[in-house]
Image 1 (tube, rainbow, N blue to C red):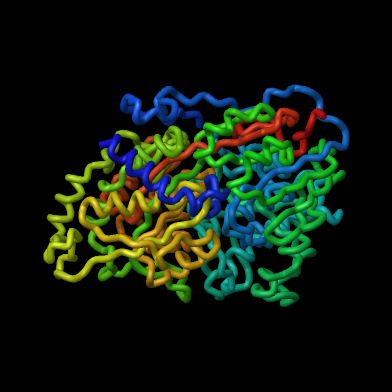
Image 2 (image 1 turned 60 degrees about the horizontal axis):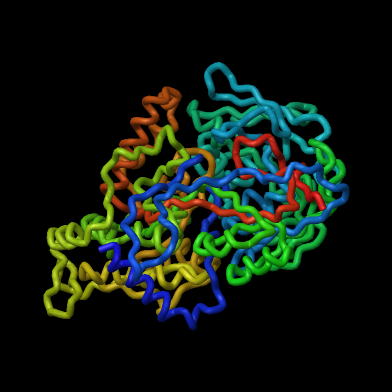
Length: 611
Protein backbone atom coordinates (compact mmCIF):
# COMPACT_ATOMS: atom_id res chain seq x y z
CA UNK A 1 0.00 0.00 0.00
CA UNK A 2 2.84 2.37 0.87
CA UNK A 3 4.43 1.64 -2.52
CA UNK A 4 1.15 2.43 -4.29
CA UNK A 5 0.76 5.66 -2.39
CA UNK A 6 4.33 6.71 -3.16
CA UNK A 7 3.72 6.16 -6.87
CA UNK A 8 0.59 8.33 -6.59
CA UNK A 9 2.64 11.11 -5.02
CA UNK A 10 5.34 10.74 -7.65
CA UNK A 11 2.81 11.01 -10.47
CA UNK A 12 1.22 14.08 -8.91
CA UNK A 13 4.61 15.72 -8.63
CA UNK A 14 5.37 14.90 -12.26
CA UNK A 15 2.05 16.25 -13.54
CA UNK A 16 2.49 19.45 -11.57
CA UNK A 17 6.22 19.92 -12.21
CA UNK A 18 5.76 22.42 -15.02
CA UNK A 19 3.22 24.47 -13.07
CA UNK A 20 5.42 24.46 -9.98
CA UNK A 21 8.83 24.71 -11.62
CA UNK A 22 9.55 28.01 -9.90
CA UNK A 23 8.64 26.78 -6.40
CA UNK A 24 10.52 24.48 -4.06
CA UNK A 25 8.56 24.23 -0.86
CA UNK A 26 7.09 26.01 2.11
CA UNK A 27 7.46 25.03 5.71
CA UNK A 28 6.34 28.19 7.51
CA UNK A 29 2.61 27.69 7.50
CA UNK A 30 1.89 28.43 11.10
CA UNK A 31 -1.06 30.64 11.72
CA UNK A 32 0.70 32.28 14.55
CA UNK A 33 1.09 32.06 18.29
CA UNK A 34 -0.75 30.62 20.81
CA UNK A 35 2.56 32.40 21.15
CA UNK A 36 5.11 31.89 18.17
CA UNK A 37 12.42 18.49 22.58
CA UNK A 38 14.58 16.22 21.09
CA UNK A 39 12.81 13.47 19.24
CA UNK A 40 13.81 11.68 16.08
CA UNK A 41 10.38 11.15 14.58
CA UNK A 42 11.56 7.64 13.84
CA UNK A 43 9.20 5.60 11.72
CA UNK A 44 8.98 2.08 10.30
CA UNK A 45 9.71 2.09 6.61
CA UNK A 46 9.45 -0.45 3.86
CA UNK A 47 12.49 -1.53 1.93
CA UNK A 48 13.35 0.56 -1.10
CA UNK A 49 13.45 -1.09 -4.50
CA UNK A 50 15.13 -0.28 -7.77
CA UNK A 51 11.92 1.45 -8.81
CA UNK A 52 11.91 3.41 -5.58
CA UNK A 53 15.58 4.40 -5.24
CA UNK A 54 14.62 7.35 -3.41
CA UNK A 55 15.65 8.92 -0.47
CA UNK A 56 17.51 7.87 2.58
CA UNK A 57 15.58 5.62 4.93
CA UNK A 58 13.58 7.97 7.14
CA UNK A 59 13.85 5.46 9.99
CA UNK A 60 17.62 5.77 10.10
CA UNK A 61 17.28 8.35 12.88
CA UNK A 62 17.61 12.09 12.71
CA UNK A 63 20.41 13.62 14.73
CA UNK A 64 20.91 17.35 14.25
CA UNK A 65 22.92 19.88 16.26
CA UNK A 66 21.06 22.71 18.00
CA UNK A 67 23.93 25.21 18.01
CA UNK A 68 26.42 26.44 15.42
CA UNK A 69 29.89 24.93 15.57
CA UNK A 70 31.74 28.22 14.98
CA UNK A 71 33.15 29.24 18.39
CA UNK A 72 35.08 32.32 17.24
CA UNK A 73 34.52 35.75 18.77
CA UNK A 74 32.10 37.94 16.80
CA UNK A 75 33.78 40.74 14.90
CA UNK A 76 32.97 44.29 15.94
CA UNK A 77 30.24 46.04 13.94
CA UNK A 78 29.30 42.95 11.97
CA UNK A 79 26.30 42.88 9.66
CA UNK A 80 23.94 40.01 8.99
CA UNK A 81 21.01 39.16 6.74
CA UNK A 82 18.25 36.81 7.81
CA UNK A 83 15.69 35.37 5.41
CA UNK A 84 11.97 35.23 6.02
CA UNK A 85 11.17 32.28 3.78
CA UNK A 86 7.73 32.90 2.40
CA UNK A 87 5.86 33.09 -0.87
CA UNK A 88 3.54 35.77 0.48
CA UNK A 89 4.28 39.23 1.93
CA UNK A 90 4.21 39.62 5.70
CA UNK A 91 1.11 41.50 6.77
CA UNK A 92 2.87 44.14 8.87
CA UNK A 93 0.84 44.20 12.09
CA UNK A 94 3.89 44.64 14.28
CA UNK A 95 2.49 44.62 17.81
CA UNK A 96 2.17 41.52 20.01
CA UNK A 97 -1.38 42.34 21.10
CA UNK A 98 -2.67 42.61 17.52
CA UNK A 99 -0.65 40.40 15.18
CA UNK A 100 -1.91 36.97 14.14
CA UNK A 101 0.51 35.58 11.54
CA UNK A 102 3.81 33.81 12.12
CA UNK A 103 5.60 36.03 9.59
CA UNK A 104 4.75 39.20 11.51
CA UNK A 105 6.12 37.55 14.64
CA UNK A 106 9.41 36.91 12.84
CA UNK A 107 9.70 40.68 12.40
CA UNK A 108 8.52 41.54 15.91
CA UNK A 109 10.90 39.13 17.63
CA UNK A 110 13.98 41.06 16.48
CA UNK A 111 13.02 44.37 18.09
CA UNK A 112 10.68 43.31 20.87
CA UNK A 113 10.77 40.82 23.71
CA UNK A 114 8.73 39.69 26.71
CA UNK A 115 9.59 40.94 30.17
CA UNK A 116 10.13 37.24 30.98
CA UNK A 117 12.81 34.80 29.89
CA UNK A 118 12.10 31.08 29.66
CA UNK A 119 13.97 27.87 30.40
CA UNK A 120 14.13 24.66 28.38
CA UNK A 121 10.75 23.58 29.71
CA UNK A 122 9.24 26.92 28.62
CA UNK A 123 8.77 28.09 32.21
CA UNK A 124 9.44 31.71 33.14
CA UNK A 125 12.76 32.52 34.79
CA UNK A 126 14.28 35.54 36.50
CA UNK A 127 16.59 36.19 33.51
CA UNK A 128 14.25 38.54 31.65
CA UNK A 129 13.72 42.29 31.88
CA UNK A 130 11.72 41.86 35.09
CA UNK A 131 12.00 39.98 38.38
CA UNK A 132 8.87 38.32 39.71
CA UNK A 133 7.45 36.67 42.79
CA UNK A 134 4.38 34.46 43.14
CA UNK A 135 2.19 34.51 46.23
CA UNK A 136 1.76 31.46 48.47
CA UNK A 137 -1.76 30.88 47.16
CA UNK A 138 -0.43 30.96 43.55
CA UNK A 139 -2.98 33.59 42.60
CA UNK A 140 -0.86 36.76 42.48
CA UNK A 141 2.36 37.46 40.59
CA UNK A 142 4.29 40.62 41.42
CA UNK A 143 6.52 41.79 38.56
CA UNK A 144 9.26 44.38 39.01
CA UNK A 145 10.94 45.96 35.97
CA UNK A 146 14.72 45.85 36.22
CA UNK A 147 16.75 49.06 36.18
CA UNK A 148 18.02 50.30 32.83
CA UNK A 149 15.35 48.73 30.61
CA UNK A 150 14.47 51.31 27.96
CA UNK A 151 12.25 51.58 24.92
CA UNK A 152 14.06 52.40 21.71
CA UNK A 153 13.14 56.08 22.01
CA UNK A 154 14.95 56.25 25.34
CA UNK A 155 11.88 56.21 27.57
CA UNK A 156 12.08 53.74 30.47
CA UNK A 157 9.96 50.60 30.34
CA UNK A 158 7.20 51.07 32.91
CA UNK A 159 4.93 48.69 34.75
CA UNK A 160 2.01 50.65 33.29
CA UNK A 161 3.20 49.64 29.81
CA UNK A 162 2.52 46.02 30.74
CA UNK A 163 -0.80 47.10 32.22
CA UNK A 164 -1.61 48.76 28.89
CA UNK A 165 -1.34 45.44 27.07
CA UNK A 166 -3.90 43.95 29.45
CA UNK A 167 -6.13 46.99 28.96
CA UNK A 168 -5.94 46.50 25.19
CA UNK A 169 -6.44 42.73 25.25
CA UNK A 170 -9.46 42.94 27.51
CA UNK A 171 -11.00 46.09 26.03
CA UNK A 172 -14.61 45.77 24.81
CA UNK A 173 -13.49 47.06 21.38
CA UNK A 174 -10.64 44.54 21.03
CA UNK A 175 -11.10 42.47 17.90
CA UNK A 176 -7.88 40.47 18.01
CA UNK A 177 -7.46 36.81 18.87
CA UNK A 178 -5.52 36.94 22.14
CA UNK A 179 -8.22 37.38 24.72
CA UNK A 180 -7.55 33.89 26.05
CA UNK A 181 -7.79 32.14 29.39
CA UNK A 182 -4.72 33.76 30.96
CA UNK A 183 -6.24 37.17 30.20
CA UNK A 184 -9.86 36.42 31.13
CA UNK A 185 -8.70 34.74 34.35
CA UNK A 186 -7.34 38.04 35.68
CA UNK A 187 -9.53 39.20 38.55
CA UNK A 188 -12.02 41.79 37.33
CA UNK A 189 -11.17 41.25 33.66
CA UNK A 190 -14.60 39.89 32.62
CA UNK A 191 -16.35 42.99 34.00
CA UNK A 192 -13.85 45.25 32.20
CA UNK A 193 -14.20 43.18 29.00
CA UNK A 194 -17.98 43.53 29.13
CA UNK A 195 -17.76 47.31 29.49
CA UNK A 196 -19.11 47.32 33.05
CA UNK A 197 -16.07 49.17 34.41
CA UNK A 198 -13.01 51.03 33.12
CA UNK A 199 -10.71 49.47 35.72
CA UNK A 200 -9.23 45.98 36.00
CA UNK A 201 -9.51 45.28 39.70
CA UNK A 202 -6.96 42.46 39.68
CA UNK A 203 -4.09 44.64 38.41
CA UNK A 204 -2.29 47.26 40.47
CA UNK A 205 0.73 49.39 39.60
CA UNK A 206 3.11 50.90 42.17
CA UNK A 207 3.52 54.65 42.56
CA UNK A 208 7.01 54.56 41.07
CA UNK A 209 5.65 52.64 38.04
CA UNK A 210 8.25 49.91 38.46
CA UNK A 211 6.09 47.14 39.89
CA UNK A 212 2.84 45.55 38.73
CA UNK A 213 0.84 42.95 40.64
CA UNK A 214 -1.60 40.71 38.73
CA UNK A 215 -4.13 38.65 40.67
CA UNK A 216 -6.01 35.78 39.07
CA UNK A 217 -9.47 34.50 39.89
CA UNK A 218 -8.23 30.93 39.84
CA UNK A 219 -4.76 29.69 40.68
CA UNK A 220 -3.37 27.87 37.62
CA UNK A 221 -0.12 26.14 36.65
CA UNK A 222 -0.33 28.04 33.36
CA UNK A 223 0.92 31.05 35.30
CA UNK A 224 4.46 29.74 34.84
CA UNK A 225 4.16 29.04 31.11
CA UNK A 226 1.24 31.03 29.73
CA UNK A 227 1.38 34.44 31.42
CA UNK A 228 1.26 37.42 29.07
CA UNK A 229 4.54 39.32 29.33
CA UNK A 230 4.50 41.65 26.32
CA UNK A 231 4.34 45.35 27.20
CA UNK A 232 2.93 48.02 24.85
CA UNK A 233 4.56 51.52 24.75
CA UNK A 234 1.58 53.66 25.72
CA UNK A 235 3.52 56.91 25.22
CA UNK A 236 4.43 55.91 21.65
CA UNK A 237 1.29 54.34 20.21
CA UNK A 238 -1.29 56.52 21.98
CA UNK A 239 -3.67 55.88 24.84
CA UNK A 240 -7.12 54.45 24.16
CA UNK A 241 -8.01 54.84 27.83
CA UNK A 242 -7.97 58.65 27.58
CA UNK A 243 -9.53 58.77 24.12
CA UNK A 244 -6.27 59.90 22.53
CA UNK A 245 -6.79 57.18 19.91
CA UNK A 246 -9.50 54.62 19.18
CA UNK A 247 -8.84 50.90 18.95
CA UNK A 248 -9.43 51.03 15.19
CA UNK A 249 -6.96 53.90 14.78
CA UNK A 250 -4.39 52.12 16.91
CA UNK A 251 -4.48 48.87 14.92
CA UNK A 252 -3.86 50.72 11.64
CA UNK A 253 -1.43 53.26 13.09
CA UNK A 254 1.99 53.97 11.60
CA UNK A 255 3.28 53.66 15.17
CA UNK A 256 2.63 49.93 14.80
CA UNK A 257 3.01 49.32 11.08
CA UNK A 258 5.75 51.75 9.98
CA UNK A 259 7.83 52.81 12.98
CA UNK A 260 7.20 50.38 15.84
CA UNK A 261 9.45 50.38 18.88
CA UNK A 262 10.38 47.76 21.44
CA UNK A 263 13.05 47.27 24.05
CA UNK A 264 14.86 44.44 22.29
CA UNK A 265 18.46 44.43 21.04
CA UNK A 266 17.69 45.91 17.63
CA UNK A 267 15.49 48.83 16.65
CA UNK A 268 13.57 49.21 13.41
CA UNK A 269 15.28 51.64 11.04
CA UNK A 270 13.29 51.06 7.84
CA UNK A 271 10.45 48.86 6.68
CA UNK A 272 9.68 48.07 3.07
CA UNK A 273 6.13 46.76 3.55
CA UNK A 274 5.87 43.05 2.94
CA UNK A 275 9.46 42.82 1.72
CA UNK A 276 12.18 43.69 4.22
CA UNK A 277 13.12 45.27 7.53
CA UNK A 278 16.38 47.02 8.37
CA UNK A 279 17.29 46.90 12.05
CA UNK A 280 20.03 48.90 13.75
CA UNK A 281 21.82 48.09 16.96
CA UNK A 282 20.22 49.51 20.11
CA UNK A 283 23.25 50.61 22.09
CA UNK A 284 21.24 51.01 25.32
CA UNK A 285 19.86 47.48 25.26
CA UNK A 286 19.49 46.38 28.88
CA UNK A 287 21.50 43.15 28.57
CA UNK A 288 24.46 44.85 26.90
CA UNK A 289 25.67 46.13 23.55
CA UNK A 290 24.50 43.86 20.69
CA UNK A 291 27.23 42.22 18.65
CA UNK A 292 25.86 43.26 15.26
CA UNK A 293 25.82 46.81 13.96
CA UNK A 294 22.87 46.05 11.71
CA UNK A 295 20.53 43.26 10.77
CA UNK A 296 18.42 42.89 7.65
CA UNK A 297 15.44 40.60 7.42
CA UNK A 298 14.13 40.11 3.92
CA UNK A 299 11.51 37.92 2.33
CA UNK A 300 12.91 35.18 0.12
CA UNK A 301 10.75 32.78 -1.84
CA UNK A 302 10.91 29.12 -1.01
CA UNK A 303 11.94 28.54 -4.63
CA UNK A 304 15.17 30.47 -4.30
CA UNK A 305 16.22 30.04 -0.66
CA UNK A 306 18.85 27.36 -1.27
CA UNK A 307 20.50 29.36 -4.04
CA UNK A 308 20.49 32.47 -1.86
CA UNK A 309 22.09 30.53 1.01
CA UNK A 310 24.67 29.02 -1.32
CA UNK A 311 25.67 32.48 -2.57
CA UNK A 312 25.97 33.77 0.99
CA UNK A 313 23.33 36.44 0.40
CA UNK A 314 21.59 35.46 3.63
CA UNK A 315 23.14 34.05 6.79
CA UNK A 316 20.20 32.32 8.47
CA UNK A 317 17.07 30.85 6.93
CA UNK A 318 14.43 28.28 7.66
CA UNK A 319 14.62 25.62 4.97
CA UNK A 320 11.49 23.90 3.69
CA UNK A 321 12.01 20.32 4.74
CA UNK A 322 11.16 19.01 1.29
CA UNK A 323 14.47 20.60 0.24
CA UNK A 324 16.50 18.79 2.88
CA UNK A 325 18.37 16.52 0.45
CA UNK A 326 19.65 19.45 -1.62
CA UNK A 327 20.36 21.58 1.45
CA UNK A 328 22.75 18.92 2.75
CA UNK A 329 24.98 19.52 -0.27
CA UNK A 330 25.60 23.24 0.39
CA UNK A 331 29.15 23.59 1.70
CA UNK A 332 28.99 27.03 3.32
CA UNK A 333 26.10 26.30 5.69
CA UNK A 334 25.34 23.91 8.51
CA UNK A 335 21.92 22.51 9.31
CA UNK A 336 20.26 22.77 12.72
CA UNK A 337 16.93 21.11 13.46
CA UNK A 338 14.56 20.15 16.24
CA UNK A 339 10.98 18.99 16.69
CA UNK A 340 8.80 22.06 16.34
CA UNK A 341 6.11 23.36 18.70
CA UNK A 342 3.69 23.00 15.81
CA UNK A 343 1.55 20.58 13.86
CA UNK A 344 -0.44 20.50 10.64
CA UNK A 345 -4.08 19.46 10.59
CA UNK A 346 -7.30 19.11 8.63
CA UNK A 347 -10.09 21.20 10.18
CA UNK A 348 -13.81 20.55 9.79
CA UNK A 349 -16.09 23.59 9.81
CA UNK A 350 -18.76 23.00 12.44
CA UNK A 351 -20.25 26.41 13.20
CA UNK A 352 -19.71 30.16 13.38
CA UNK A 353 -17.95 32.77 15.49
CA UNK A 354 -20.42 35.00 17.34
CA UNK A 355 -18.56 38.33 17.22
CA UNK A 356 -21.06 40.15 19.41
CA UNK A 357 -20.80 37.67 22.26
CA UNK A 358 -17.23 36.64 21.41
CA UNK A 359 -17.90 32.94 21.51
CA UNK A 360 -17.98 29.95 19.20
CA UNK A 361 -21.38 28.55 18.23
CA UNK A 362 -21.55 24.97 16.98
CA UNK A 363 -24.19 24.23 14.37
CA UNK A 364 -25.72 20.76 14.92
CA UNK A 365 -26.80 20.77 11.27
CA UNK A 366 -23.37 21.64 9.85
CA UNK A 367 -22.36 19.70 6.76
CA UNK A 368 -19.54 18.04 8.73
CA UNK A 369 -21.62 17.47 11.90
CA UNK A 370 -21.46 13.65 11.74
CA UNK A 371 -18.37 12.62 13.68
CA UNK A 372 -18.30 9.20 11.99
CA UNK A 373 -17.63 10.99 8.70
CA UNK A 374 -14.86 13.04 10.30
CA UNK A 375 -13.34 9.90 11.78
CA UNK A 376 -13.52 8.20 8.40
CA UNK A 377 -11.72 11.07 6.71
CA UNK A 378 -8.90 10.80 9.26
CA UNK A 379 -8.57 7.04 8.66
CA UNK A 380 -8.47 7.70 4.91
CA UNK A 381 -5.38 9.97 5.06
CA UNK A 382 -1.96 8.39 4.47
CA UNK A 383 0.16 10.80 6.52
CA UNK A 384 3.06 8.40 6.87
CA UNK A 385 3.70 8.39 3.13
CA UNK A 386 3.53 12.21 3.09
CA UNK A 387 6.14 12.45 5.86
CA UNK A 388 8.54 9.88 4.47
CA UNK A 389 8.39 10.47 0.76
CA UNK A 390 7.98 14.24 0.56
CA UNK A 391 9.68 15.33 3.76
CA UNK A 392 12.42 12.69 4.23
CA UNK A 393 11.17 11.79 7.69
CA UNK A 394 11.30 15.40 8.87
CA UNK A 395 7.55 15.25 9.26
CA UNK A 396 5.91 12.27 10.90
CA UNK A 397 2.33 11.16 11.58
CA UNK A 398 0.57 13.18 14.24
CA UNK A 399 -1.59 11.42 16.79
CA UNK A 400 -3.07 13.85 19.33
CA UNK A 401 -3.50 17.60 19.68
CA UNK A 402 -0.91 17.90 22.45
CA UNK A 403 2.46 17.74 20.74
CA UNK A 404 5.37 15.44 21.71
CA UNK A 405 7.42 18.48 22.79
CA UNK A 406 5.18 18.56 25.86
CA UNK A 407 6.48 15.16 26.91
CA UNK A 408 4.74 15.17 30.30
CA UNK A 409 1.31 15.59 28.72
CA UNK A 410 1.47 14.10 25.21
CA UNK A 411 -0.07 10.63 25.48
CA UNK A 412 1.35 8.26 22.90
CA UNK A 413 -0.66 5.35 24.33
CA UNK A 414 -3.95 6.67 22.96
CA UNK A 415 -5.14 4.69 19.95
CA UNK A 416 -5.64 7.19 17.15
CA UNK A 417 -6.65 6.76 13.51
CA UNK A 418 -3.87 5.78 11.13
CA UNK A 419 -4.14 5.01 7.44
CA UNK A 420 -6.84 2.35 7.06
CA UNK A 421 -9.16 2.89 4.07
CA UNK A 422 -11.23 -0.19 4.89
CA UNK A 423 -11.95 1.17 8.36
CA UNK A 424 -12.86 4.50 6.75
CA UNK A 425 -15.31 2.79 4.42
CA UNK A 426 -16.90 0.89 7.31
CA UNK A 427 -17.41 4.10 9.28
CA UNK A 428 -19.02 5.79 6.28
CA UNK A 429 -21.31 2.81 5.81
CA UNK A 430 -22.27 3.02 9.49
CA UNK A 431 -23.02 6.74 9.05
CA UNK A 432 -25.35 5.94 6.16
CA UNK A 433 -23.14 7.59 3.55
CA UNK A 434 -23.38 5.24 0.57
CA UNK A 435 -23.09 5.49 -3.19
CA UNK A 436 -26.69 5.41 -4.37
CA UNK A 437 -26.20 6.33 -8.04
CA UNK A 438 -23.14 4.27 -8.95
CA UNK A 439 -20.84 7.19 -9.76
CA UNK A 440 -18.19 6.04 -7.28
CA UNK A 441 -18.94 8.74 -4.73
CA UNK A 442 -21.12 8.50 -1.67
CA UNK A 443 -24.26 10.48 -1.05
CA UNK A 444 -25.04 11.66 2.49
CA UNK A 445 -27.40 9.87 4.88
CA UNK A 446 -30.36 11.67 3.27
CA UNK A 447 -29.38 10.45 -0.19
CA UNK A 448 -28.22 13.92 -1.26
CA UNK A 449 -25.07 14.74 -3.21
CA UNK A 450 -22.11 15.05 -0.84
CA UNK A 451 -19.28 17.23 -2.19
CA UNK A 452 -16.80 18.97 0.10
CA UNK A 453 -14.98 22.24 -0.63
CA UNK A 454 -11.39 21.99 0.61
CA UNK A 455 -9.41 25.17 1.39
CA UNK A 456 -5.63 24.87 1.47
CA UNK A 457 -2.68 27.23 1.25
CA UNK A 458 -0.38 27.76 -1.70
CA UNK A 459 3.39 27.75 -1.42
CA UNK A 460 6.06 25.51 -2.77
CA UNK A 461 6.49 22.34 -4.70
CA UNK A 462 4.62 20.16 -2.23
CA UNK A 463 1.52 22.22 -1.45
CA UNK A 464 -0.51 21.21 -4.50
CA UNK A 465 0.58 17.54 -4.54
CA UNK A 466 -0.27 17.13 -0.85
CA UNK A 467 -3.71 18.67 -1.32
CA UNK A 468 -4.36 16.46 -4.36
CA UNK A 469 -3.00 13.43 -2.51
CA UNK A 470 -5.50 13.89 0.31
CA UNK A 471 -8.29 14.49 -2.23
CA UNK A 472 -7.36 11.15 -3.82
CA UNK A 473 -7.21 9.45 -0.40
CA UNK A 474 -10.76 10.59 0.27
CA UNK A 475 -11.90 9.65 -3.23
CA UNK A 476 -10.55 6.14 -2.61
CA UNK A 477 -13.14 5.69 0.14
CA UNK A 478 -15.92 7.37 -1.85
CA UNK A 479 -15.84 10.97 -0.62
CA UNK A 480 -15.83 13.63 -3.31
CA UNK A 481 -13.63 16.59 -2.34
CA UNK A 482 -12.68 19.53 -4.53
CA UNK A 483 -10.34 22.46 -3.99
CA UNK A 484 -12.18 25.63 -3.03
CA UNK A 485 -12.41 27.79 -6.18
CA UNK A 486 -10.39 25.09 -7.94
CA UNK A 487 -7.06 26.34 -6.58
CA UNK A 488 -4.87 26.89 -3.53
CA UNK A 489 -5.08 30.22 -1.69
CA UNK A 490 -2.37 32.63 -0.58
CA UNK A 491 -1.53 32.56 3.15
CA UNK A 492 -3.20 35.80 4.23
CA UNK A 493 -6.35 35.40 2.13
CA UNK A 494 -6.63 31.77 3.24
CA UNK A 495 -6.72 32.68 6.91
CA UNK A 496 -9.01 35.63 6.23
CA UNK A 497 -11.55 33.19 4.81
CA UNK A 498 -11.09 30.62 7.56
CA UNK A 499 -11.39 33.24 10.33
CA UNK A 500 -14.51 34.70 8.71
CA UNK A 501 -16.16 31.25 8.50
CA UNK A 502 -16.60 31.60 4.76
CA UNK A 503 -19.66 29.43 4.06
CA UNK A 504 -17.96 27.98 0.99
CA UNK A 505 -15.39 26.18 3.19
CA UNK A 506 -16.30 22.70 4.43
CA UNK A 507 -12.82 21.50 5.36
CA UNK A 508 -9.42 23.17 5.38
CA UNK A 509 -5.75 22.37 5.92
CA UNK A 510 -4.02 24.60 8.47
CA UNK A 511 -1.17 24.54 10.94
CA UNK A 512 -0.67 25.75 14.49
CA UNK A 513 2.28 27.03 16.39
CA UNK A 514 1.18 25.90 19.83
CA UNK A 515 3.21 28.33 21.88
CA UNK A 516 5.01 27.26 25.02
CA UNK A 517 2.04 26.46 27.27
CA UNK A 518 0.52 22.97 26.96
CA UNK A 519 -2.92 24.40 27.79
CA UNK A 520 -4.91 23.97 24.53
CA UNK A 521 -7.82 26.24 25.51
CA UNK A 522 -6.45 29.14 23.43
CA UNK A 523 -6.98 27.03 20.31
CA UNK A 524 -9.99 24.90 21.22
CA UNK A 525 -11.89 26.72 23.98
CA UNK A 526 -15.48 27.88 23.62
CA UNK A 527 -14.41 31.52 23.69
CA UNK A 528 -11.17 31.10 21.70
CA UNK A 529 -11.22 33.10 18.47
CA UNK A 530 -8.54 30.75 17.14
CA UNK A 531 -10.99 27.84 17.43
CA UNK A 532 -11.63 28.01 13.70
CA UNK A 533 -13.68 24.80 13.50
CA UNK A 534 -16.12 26.36 16.03
CA UNK A 535 -16.41 23.03 17.85
CA UNK A 536 -17.82 23.27 21.37
CA UNK A 537 -19.11 20.81 23.96
CA UNK A 538 -19.72 20.77 27.68
CA UNK A 539 -17.17 17.99 28.13
CA UNK A 540 -14.57 20.02 26.26
CA UNK A 541 -15.34 23.03 28.50
CA UNK A 542 -15.05 20.87 31.62
CA UNK A 543 -11.70 19.31 30.70
CA UNK A 544 -10.08 22.53 29.51
CA UNK A 545 -11.13 24.29 32.73
CA UNK A 546 -9.79 21.41 34.82
CA UNK A 547 -6.44 21.48 33.02
CA UNK A 548 -5.76 25.03 34.21
CA UNK A 549 -7.44 24.77 37.61
CA UNK A 550 -5.77 24.91 41.00
CA UNK A 551 -6.01 21.12 41.15
CA UNK A 552 -3.80 21.00 38.05
CA UNK A 553 -0.80 22.01 40.17
CA UNK A 554 -0.79 18.27 40.86
CA UNK A 555 1.08 17.11 37.75
CA UNK A 556 -0.48 13.63 37.83
CA UNK A 557 -3.95 15.16 37.92
CA UNK A 558 -3.16 17.50 35.03
CA UNK A 559 -1.63 14.67 33.03
CA UNK A 560 -4.81 12.60 33.48
CA UNK A 561 -7.03 15.54 32.50
CA UNK A 562 -5.06 16.13 29.31
CA UNK A 563 -5.15 12.42 28.52
CA UNK A 564 -8.94 12.58 28.75
CA UNK A 565 -8.98 15.71 26.58
CA UNK A 566 -6.77 14.13 23.92
CA UNK A 567 -9.03 11.08 23.91
CA UNK A 568 -12.12 13.30 23.58
CA UNK A 569 -10.66 15.09 20.56
CA UNK A 570 -9.72 11.79 18.94
CA UNK A 571 -13.33 10.68 19.38
CA UNK A 572 -14.96 13.96 18.31
CA UNK A 573 -12.40 14.93 15.61
CA UNK A 574 -13.10 18.64 15.17
CA UNK A 575 -9.65 18.58 13.61
CA UNK A 576 -7.57 15.65 12.39
CA UNK A 577 -3.87 16.23 13.09
CA UNK A 578 -1.82 15.09 10.11
CA UNK A 579 1.89 15.54 10.86
CA UNK A 580 4.21 16.73 13.57
CA UNK A 581 7.24 18.46 12.18
CA UNK A 582 10.89 19.22 12.48
CA UNK A 583 11.94 22.74 11.65
CA UNK A 584 15.18 22.98 9.71
CA UNK A 585 17.53 25.97 9.81
CA UNK A 586 20.35 26.66 7.38
CA UNK A 587 23.08 28.78 8.98
CA UNK A 588 26.14 30.25 7.28
CA UNK A 589 29.35 28.98 8.84
CA UNK A 590 30.45 32.54 9.67
CA UNK A 591 27.62 32.89 12.20
CA UNK A 592 28.54 32.64 15.89
CA UNK A 593 26.55 32.49 19.14
CA UNK A 594 23.42 31.09 17.53
CA UNK A 595 21.31 28.25 18.92
CA UNK A 596 17.79 26.89 18.48
CA UNK A 597 17.92 25.05 21.83
CA UNK A 598 15.24 26.51 24.16
CA UNK A 599 17.56 25.70 27.07
CA UNK A 600 20.51 27.58 25.57
CA UNK A 601 22.23 30.39 27.47
CA UNK A 602 22.65 32.36 24.23
CA UNK A 603 20.48 35.43 23.55
CA UNK A 604 19.78 37.32 20.34
CA UNK A 605 22.04 40.26 21.26
CA UNK A 606 25.07 37.93 21.37
CA UNK A 607 24.57 36.60 17.84
CA UNK A 608 27.22 37.79 15.42
CA UNK A 609 29.56 36.89 12.58
CA UNK A 610 33.22 35.94 12.68
CA UNK A 611 34.19 37.37 9.28
